[in-house]
Length: 55
Image 1 (cartoon, rainbow, N blue to C red):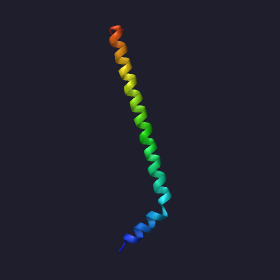
Image 2: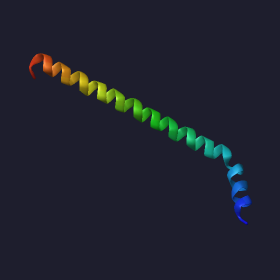
Image 3: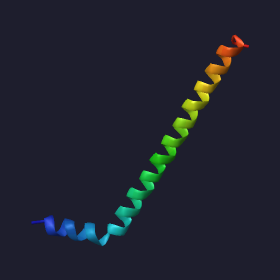
């Protein structure tokens, strides 16, 4: 069948597949980092507004 041909193409391009997987993973980690920074910044801002009475 065509399964050996698919495996052959996959293994020929394995470095590309691994590179894409690592690149996407790094992009997701950076996104998670920025989302956590944003959450902490919002929380800090809310606490500051609570202490100052909203001014």
